[in-house]
Length: 444
Ligand code: SAM
Ligand code: SF4
Ligand code: F3S
Image 1: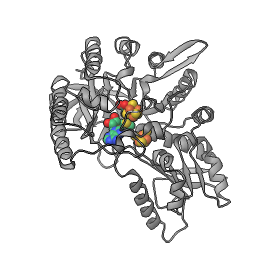
Image 2 (image 1 turned 120 degrees about the horizontal axis):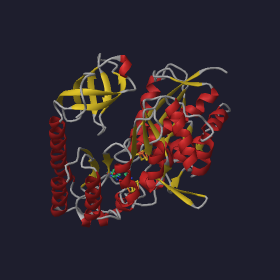
Image 3 (image 1 turned 60 degrees about the vertical axis):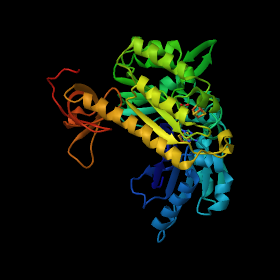
């Protein structure tokens, strides 16, 4: 089979990253080989994200860049995948003749057929929601990802319909993969060398699969993975506060490999805003979950997502969000100005003043970033466990993460890769800890 180069550029969340890897597992059967050189590809895939801002325009801008790169060469097969592809579908083919294939996230099992048909010079669009067939197809293809820290999608889609969010429209209804298929894929990843597995889903803790009248939940997957001696760490993301059930909370006491770090988006500290957003939980519900987890293990740290300047957000609502930060010291967080998404309920609402929203974002980020800096500084001189992922490209240093998923850069040795080593933290900044390995040290 003739070898051809493929370049895949991924935007958005970890699920897109997982998808890009699985797309590659699939197209490699056609002889495609991944290249890091974006100027030398026979096929160019943009795996897009639609969550905020001018997502669509960014894609056309990217295509403009690719056109320039290939001005004097044979054009690559241009594939638009991901959530913008799903939202825009055939409109993209009409607007930009450079695009050859538009494929939505639930149609990736069809990509090889589309690529083969492309040889006959047809433009194609495939955006049907066909989640069951997709996972059924991919279950039969080996996951070749050989990273130390690997992603594994267990659930996809969302039925919650927060009024600001495009995900239910781009990823479709909630679907949970069969338990045994997930375990089989986890075993492949472990065989490939994974020491950490992050279970993924847009609502990963809503995972529910019924087989022979028995319900399997996220807690069952975590507890099952705990048995594999080669696997060191288990994580999951992203969870919804309403689905933080007691069986999952209990995992934090029974399961040593589950990292004491919970990314739990709240969006706002105001009940009035949560209601307007259709979040289906209150601040108090969130605080209860926080309290239960802290009671089980006081080491657990939280991160969150905030939307600032949602339509109708008053000064008082914003203050409620600021007050929440006094109750919970988030170890890190993401905060965004509300961005109206086409087709969502909130896109029809009147926006608040742009400058006010910007000012509020600045205030909240300063608080969140100060927290992060302080928490990182408090770790200086501590000895922490770090799972070593790789040697850095540009420096003679190594990269890994602590239990709270914070990046740690340190002086190490090649043979540490894939192991958990003890690193003495010397300095830090807002996002990263810097240190030295010492084999004789004990973890804090
Ligand atoms: N399912 C997760 C949950 O419910 O918490 C969130 C998944 S979403 C991919 C990630 C984050 O993007 C959200 O938590 C939210 O803060 C942010 N987001 C989603 N839609 C947005 C919008 N229209 N404007 C600004 N931020 C948005
Ligand atoms: Fe979007 Fe809400 Fe679903 Fe999260 S729960 S993916 S924010 S609709
Ligand atoms: Fe973006 Fe789609 Fe993920 S909109 S955040 S790539 S689910």
